[in-house]
Length: 315
Image (cartoon, rainbow, N blue to C red; front, side, top):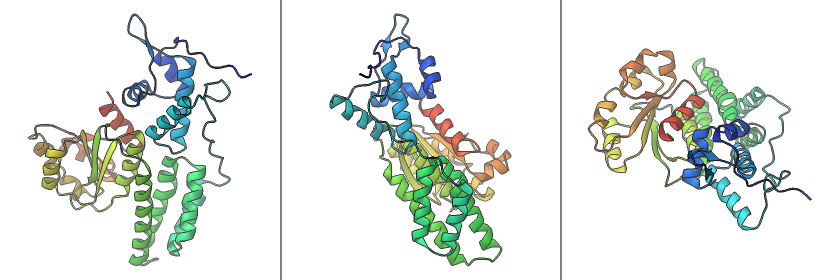
C-alpha cells in the first residue's frame, strides 16, 4: 500500500524553495492570501515544512503551469482534502494535472501556420492553431514565440504592401479578441492587490498590455484592464477613488512615452499613492526615457515585468 507522506515539520523555507522551484516570497504570499499551508513555527520563529507541504506546492505549481489560476488550484486542493483524499508519495495527494506533451513541431511552425490562417481570414484554422499551441506550450512561449512573431510578420507585410490594411486589422483584432477571452478565463481576486493596466495617451498598441494583464491575473492579482489611449487626468481622477495598489502603462512610440512624464507628479498629490510602473518597446530602444519618467521601469521582457510586480507587491 502506498505510504502517506510525513506531516512532520522539518524543512526550512529555503530548502522547500530549492525542492519546488518556487520562490520563498511566493510561498509566503500563497500562505497569507490563500491559506495554502500552515507551517510550524520553531522557537526562533523560522517556518518549518513537512513532506506533505512540499507535495502540495509541487502539485499547485504543476496546476498553474497547466493553466489553472492559483485560486482555482487551491480550491481544487481543499475540495480534495475535504473529500478524504490523502497525500501519498505516488500521487502527491491525488492525480496531478497531466503534463503537456512535447510538441512534434516548433513554435515557429505554429507562428507560420497562424500567420497564413490570418492572411486567409480563416478563423477555424487560426482557432485550431491556438488550441494546439496551448496544449503543447506554456502560456509565455505562446505569447513570445508564436503570437508576437505572427504580429511582426503581419505588420511587415502591411508596411511593404503585401497585404491590405483590412487584412492587418482582421488579424490584429482576431488576436486581441482571443487574448481578451483568455484574460476572462482567469478569475479576478478581490482580496488581492489591485492593478490598473492600460496604454499611454495616444497609444493604440495594446497587445503587450493584454499579455501582462493575463500573466498578472494568473499570478493572483486583481487586474483592471483599461485598454488603449488612457488620458492622464482621467486616469488620476479614477485612481483617486478606486485606490489601486499599482498602475501600469505602456508605450511603443517616444511621443506617447513622453506623455507619461507628468503622471508621477500628478499621482504624488493623491492621499493614497499607488505604485506607478511602466514599460514597452520604446523604453528598451531608448533607455534615456526611463530617467525622465518618475515611475518604476518593469523590465525589458514580460518575465521581468511579472517578477518586478511580484517583488514590489509581495514584500
